Length: 423
Image 1 (cartoon, helix red, strand yellow):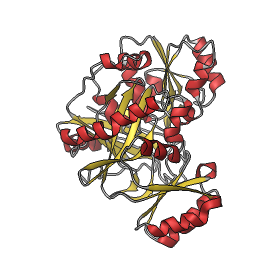
Image 2 (cartoon, helix red, strand yellow):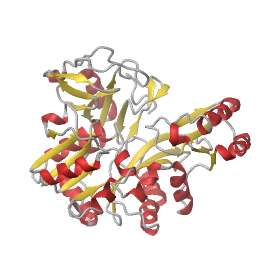
Image 3 (cartoon, one colour):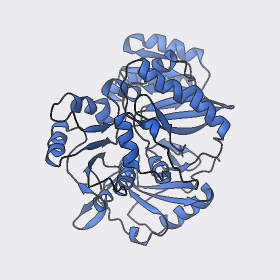
Image 4 (tube, helix red, strand yellow):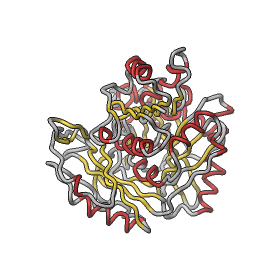
């Protein structure tokens, strides 16, 4: 089969690497890809939201399967674009249709979905510029900290957690009246703060059947001890030590099954990955958010643990035969540590030469924000490179990742040295 992966991050490198290892793969293309994907596939300079250019690429290269990495093209309806085009209709697309992608595209939509299907989550209300005063009144009914979420996509930065009620009111006003996050914050969801420890659950579905991938936990804050600004993710571990079989049973019974059944009941066509952001409160799982794709950097620990042929699994999803597939999972722990550009997640420079990747031993190097320029690999984003390692437990795996991280260099390189500190 000829396969196209859309995206350019560490997630797409991890997915592409696994696809490249399948005997079912003839040719593999990544659009636009990065310096890492260029070593295992053909990178094509096509943007993930340029549907017409994607169409031309699919027809030119006789692509049979398209795997959508990021959320943006899904929310914009790339799957529907294929279904509505007679020349593309026969191509299998992994990723939900536009109506179902609203689970990530709108926080309010996701909350209403959870309420409708009795899926445990934090209490909430939504507000717009017209109901700002009601928003202030709702904040008064809550205890700190106060959680404000921009309704739309804000590149992972639209969630604020504030200790002070006046600050919460000021930020609500700034989101609704001053468009702090652009159109994404035209509606703001305020919800009760849940106190607990977070984890991510990944589900594959063909729209009727589902399979649960290994759990993972990522670390979003830039600073050690989970301090400082939110990032796209500084590292991750899998499996999550506290997610024992009893807790996983609860997740499946109370959250995964009602989610997949709910999509079917609501007639929301879904072939793809469901990322469920969870928090363990006491001994109960609650949903913080849905994403309609794999997480990053969690993909860099979840996908390497999958021993099954990923292309076989993806084709079963496309054909509606996921119930016939058994997932084979590596029982070792996997960890990934992310090296980022100096200044990230605020202003940072690109184009810094990266050295040392060839010296990495017994770990996998996943490229994120990288590109090849004049024959050299240079930085091309905030999150640059992830190093994934295996071990008998996450501590052993982390030690391996950190040993190899010391072999890398680029100007301003930074990484957190305390991934897994809270476990």
